[in-house]
Length: 276
Image (cartoon, rainbow, N blue to C red; front, side, top):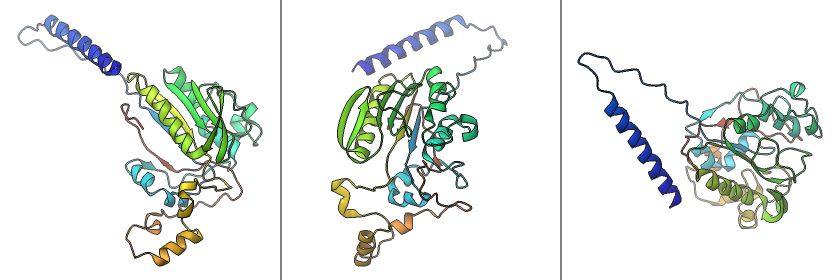
């Protein structure tokens, strides 16, 4: 209700200003209308989703997500310049190679210049910001990373995972589910002020080893697993299978076996009024 009342007051002010402007602009015959002021550039909301140790073909397990991103832009030739978790995440958040941002190894997060990151730039531009999930290796969960207004961080793991949510410790039954729920909680809060854009870094610990599924999905298996192969052998033929929705491996790329690098070549644009 407060949100609707605020929008109504804003609309009333805009209409009042428009009527006053129209009343003051009495043009003479043949006189050209003054040029309109340039529209302010749009500031889109930004949702950055990161998966941990995900190969491109892992998207076969996410057909609904792949469909959701279909109207975005794909970068099939994208590669991780440094396929290691800490350096790769620092590159993602700075746009710099590892030898420039200084995080050369997993434990080097202390070398990162937090004044030159995506979150700091957006925060200084007036964005509401939040980080959820795994920020990077070696980061103290009690500390909200610079540039973020809020954080709900985890070091790893799936069941009974330890999170620090804005400075308070929580144990959650299953990390993947909690990360999604916490992202939505932050977005609900941000969307209460529709005039302020937001940036959310949603970093899931999945599908990193040990690949522990949530109990309610444990019997389903995963694409390529023994349970899935058995199900396909016994199930009637269907045009919509994991094989049918599995994207081909991008040419010129290879797996980063044993690494801990975030990997996702899909991205899309988010309208300023979108909520997720």
